[in-house]
Image (cartoon, rainbow, N blue to C red; front, side, top):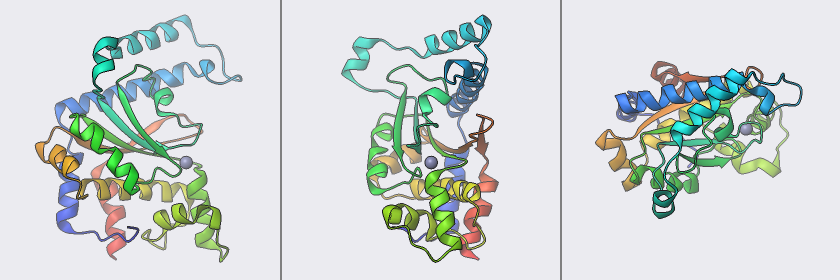
Length: 243
Ligand SMILES: [Zn+2]
């Protein structure tokens, strides 16, 4: 599970899946808008930030209103437009940092270190079988799991409390990646690669149809900004595994 074998064919699949359709681009743009609205309204979430202006609150509520769906339909089936695989860190709650508070809109899979474990992968079969447009793998700066992994890489001390998490992130990561924030980017690249090359039939079908696309991003804890990763950055990191 933790060894990563990068192949040309695997990278090609990733490139195709990261090549966003118009619908997926629209969702990505919405995520950027939602993140900007979050930044304009930080006072709603932090005690030391200024109260947001009435205009900023209005823009936020209009954005959230557009995402609302019919409750009757939602009670019968789910139809998330976006799925987010993120870290369970309490400071990175996807619905908040992307201002997507509507229900039946965002499918989330959260665990420490946003790891594509077998359970996380099977969970993603749900949005894939519901034609979810975009599946986003979201890492973040100052991640506890990445810090633990980076620490273990630079010392001989083993952290038994997070052994599986550290092993999953660290086993395949190129030796030169020692810094936790760099590991976070590598970890997203690994998630993306493993996801698009999984053997899960539902996921394979969704990706082959071109309806479901994937993206990777990093949330910066200090600036509150989400930066999307392009395919070249991801492929360069994955190619280092082969060196
Ligand atoms: Zn984290």
